[in-house]
Length: 584
Image: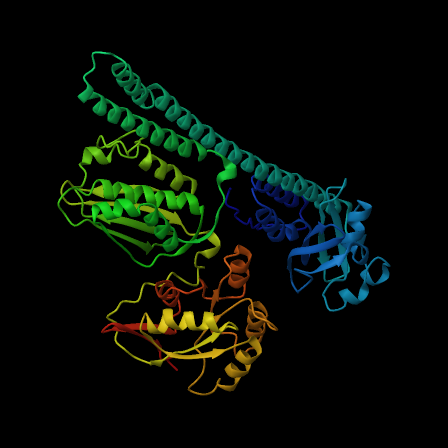
């Protein structure tokens, strides 16, 4: 979009020559406009020069209303207000598709005089933006009685007609951009399907053909009379291994091809820690066989396709387990780090490592690093494709004998990114100087078993020290908060259930936010509901986060890091949740 530069003139506005030159310049500017805001800016800043008016308004039609979108005047007019078409002169111009020239606004029955009395306006000219099916209107106003000349009206109408063309161009440009994006998306999808077809063709031509050939060859040997009896058991075992490999290949190719099906992309908010647990459980026998130890740090909840992300974790864990080497204690660590616009996950192992040459190949389909029949050669390629569907990336860092680290990224949705006025807080370290008093937490829940589970998870098991109190419904919670507002028992954080009798969690939140004395209290939802609309409603009401029951301490820690008024201080196996002293 061309940058709009206001044009100033040393000539008097009454000069017809200058007015025509000004109009030509505006037409050139409007022809390059790529947004409605740019069009409005041009009209607002230059139209007064055409007629020497004391004010100008840009009005848009919104169904049966006139929306006064912007203005440039010596005094306030009606910017940002909406009026019925039947109640204002701009509406009359739009409905009648013709200009209105009014020398004395108090003598014209079309003018709502009371609306004009607080303004400077004495005379006006209003023209429609496009005479056939007008899009809006442009008005010029004078502080002194002024009879508009035919030339002034013609100039304004020419400008308004040009504005209508510019607005249509903006709409066409937006539609064109949308179509280009659609075509680009279709091109990427076609390319992805072409890649999948290549994978399928490769599987049929080579990888699936090989075990079939093996089975046929040894079956033929078994049917030969001269085959020694002691060899038949070996041949049967070879056939069984080939059959197992064929089954693995078929399932892997099927899973890979299914990623091209749009209906399979079912996304929801998921606890990534739970997805790792599910993947690890699927590999339970292999973990026992390899005597591997898997440690997982706190992981966030993200909007993903859960089954696909389980597959990513399972493929990466399986890769680490199979390449762990022999005669060693295999250690696998999984963690996540919050970056500026994405989460970066890491799966690290102390296995045999990879060469630089191998790293360049491993994400390509059917690239296998060993001859193990359990490997299809599609595991890492599948991971890469899944993460591409999630607008993420995957990569590997490794050295022979030094273990491997696989990384992948998942973007943070735009609506969850911090605004210009805030930034993502850095993680609080364990070495912070202890300061402040113990924080007061109020747990609001009507279910005694859930209250006990939350207390066990956060207080007993995690060793978090704080002042914990309980309210069994929303009304009791509000009374307790208001009662202790000016005391040392002032509530610093509320853990709030949603589904409660009487006043539910959202009703409680609404009343809390509407109270000037309570609106700044931090609230974290602690609910059994994983419904995305509940999460959206909680976010809209300004909560600090969302925990699923029973709450995990490591997930609470991630949310506490975003609350500047609280500090989780760790020492000697326990945690203190402290109220950060406020500077007066």
